[in-house]
Image 1 (tube, rainbow, N blue to C red):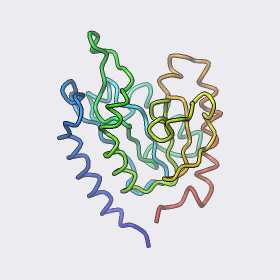
Image 2: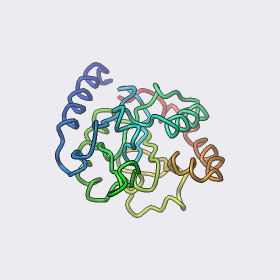
Image 3: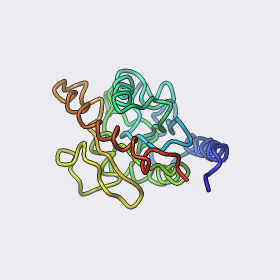
Length: 203
């Protein structure tokens, strides 16, 4: 029996309110907005980045700006639209570089751990068939022993669902040679989304 999308929307809205009040790690002190996530509550594909950047912190939305535009291009290459998927991060508040607050930094393992229950709750609500991890820190949240250099673009078995590791769009923006690799790797998502076992509505 399918899960009522309205119920999922209500639970995701409650989760967003909880994330906005979250004080489990110190990141909230320097944040403008919490960035819980957004997208299709009945999505079969979840996209999990590392953490919100400066633009995301200002807007309260995940993956806006240049990285967001590249993500949308990657999704389109896989036959998907932004509104077809659910987009979040393993950390829900922005991590800024000390002394240079305009610069983002990767989340620390303790910060990822503090946010883990929010991520697991999102997964429990959405029940995605595929989780696309963007960047090595997002991958480590699911497969701590995996190296992104070894497994990017290759679906990985996990007890939650299939994990598809990709390099982070921001990494490709700073390293143009990675961009063709990203588009090649995301082709695996096209196949997974086309497979009725991975692309249909969650039940």
